[in-house]
Length: 108
Image (cartoon, rainbow, N blue to C red; front, top):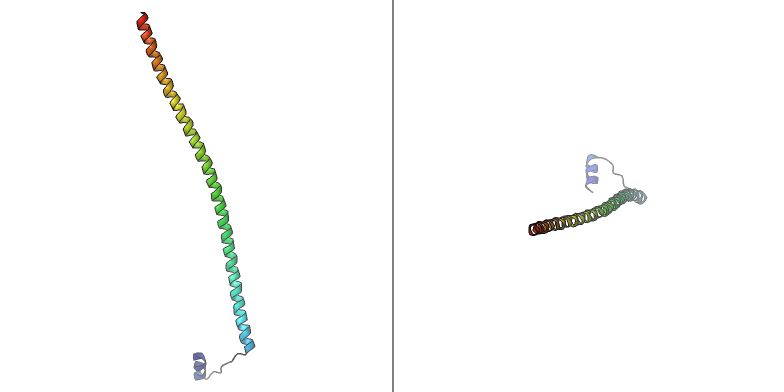
């Protein structure tokens, strides 16, 4: 409306669109919007696929880390068992040495 007034004030002729021209203009605009929406949708799908791949890799890493943690737990348990056995062997040797020293002292 203001544009028509501006054109008339400048002495320009205004073009009026026919219904068919308006329909074609709107159809072209909606087609462009639809095409752009499809492009954006496709890019979102690509991003989702990449995120799925990253998620899968993280799950695999998590499984590997659990395996490593379990292995470390087993090694720690074995080390504690060996440490306990060393303490018992040391105590048994000390008691044996004490008994031998008492026996030697008695039989001398």
